[in-house]
Image (cartoon, rainbow, N blue to C red; front, side, top):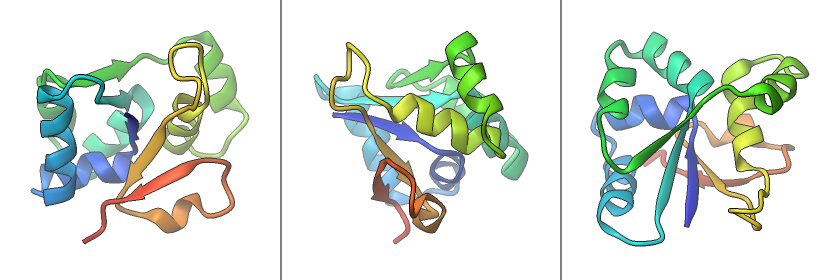
Length: 122
């Protein structure tokens, strides 16, 4: 299971969202569960809720995704860096042939986008 946390999911995890906490726990203890935190989304989450970036970066079950050149080129074509980096991270890769699901506390923002969404809004 490959899941990308968007900025709203990251901020929700910091506020004690039970569903986000369960995802983090599963990624830490279960083989085959991967949680990704794109750098641009991490910055936005920290702006919305200071301390979020340091907290998530310290968790062993979360893989931080750098803004490498292919990601930067994808981000440059969009209006918001956080959403663009998440959408780029969710696309299929050789390691993730089916792509990844985007976990979000704001599912409406992904309507019309070519991504699968996991709604964390209780």
